[in-house]
Image 1 (cartoon, one colour):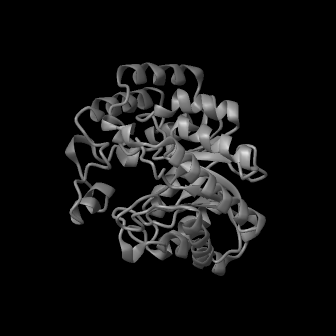
Image 2 (cartoon, rainbow, N blue to C red; image 1 turned 45 degrees about the vertical axis):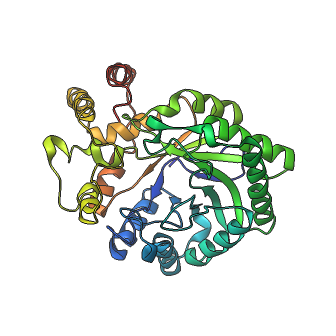
Length: 351
């Protein structure tokens, strides 16, 4: 598989990443083990996890379990030198830490992740979401930045970057990345790192798919000009692009069904609404006309964007992962890409 450098860092990873956010909840260890083996066999060496995983739901008693699964697999299989591991520090959360993170907290969370992963270095350490607030996760519909304090934000960035520089000097992390960030936030992290001689932003992990293309404008411009790689999550829109929720269907072990079982709304993080179904139908019709599989078309589209991007693919079980892996060689022709853009113009931002 093609290898891609993360931003301007010295970390090179596979062009596709395996996400592990279901490991330890919907995905039990033996299937997680199977998925990790399958991914490595397919040439995927880049694993993405987080201290708060698994999700759906996030629970105090399961925090860190996905990292532990990876650590157990590494202990059994070996080959750490042929893998790159990315993990994240959780932002403000009532399930993990209400205060999110600062320099002092990061010194602790890095060590905790290293222990769970059973390794002595994290290849990419990310901030899961900003402590100042974020318009990710559908918060863009009522985003209010009026309570932000610029001076406090910049001081926070300097404090965090000081801890990350220390961790990098100690050999605990190799590169630094953001997640669920904005264009303004990304540029300020870059400016502050340059001023302090701290680790520069190598990547940003934001949502990106056929149904969610917020990244295409301001953030894409920042990334291209500043050398930042997009790690695209929810490339299948939390399963909407698989078609399994068509016509009100709800498979019993699906993300929506599990969320409902735990008292959640089952709306896939605000993605599931009446406006999304016509968009999905349009993309499904295009895939059928072009003799393509919609799931594989969606991942291929993400890989062919005009900016540096690595899709994160994830699956509840190994059967789903096998289907994803079978489509990784797909390259969409110009006509398909043009028609995707026409559909996007007709169904912009459906959630």
